[in-house]
Image (cartoon, rainbow, N blue to C red; front, side):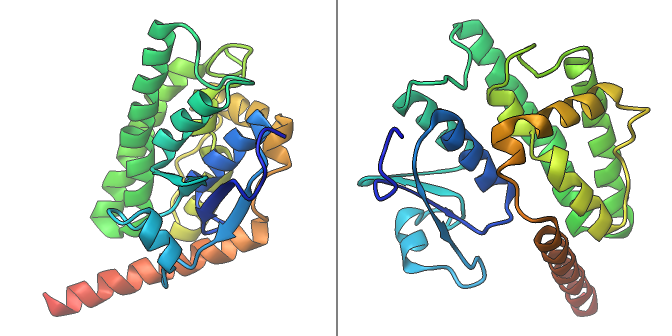
Length: 231
């Protein structure tokens, strides 16, 4: 392994897709690490020390250094451990990969959050926006095994969480947007992604995922109801 687990630590909740991006990247690189589970409702002094600005997971601790925000952590990992590159070597391809990563955060991740945390018209708006984002992503991935063609890499790690997490998100929040007939390219890519060895061996248990997402949905609805009563 490239590092001792005491030198590299990852703070996460156990179910957040953003920390699993980091787990997959570290596994891909062959980097040993220690996972430290955080209770996001009762944040530890370590988390507050290592990410004092946003106070959020994931946080990668590497020796005396700490890095937060999953896309930034991915780049840090790729630049620190050179073996098994994640990002493309060509500068133009790297720029394109970063563009699509930003697109996925804005047009896939954010609408999923809205669809999950909102109800009624706001939820419908999130579902509509997500469908539109997936339409564009379908054009990008159709006919390819991975976003890099035959090569698994950065964009697969960034977007790949939807292959597993979206199901639980939709089930808990009572909406459905992922249709294999509408998105055959994404559907096949999801299957390819989940067959990658480091992915299928590193996923949170489905029962834990479902119970967590049901709990998070109930918390979101309770928050919405309390706001409505106070208005």
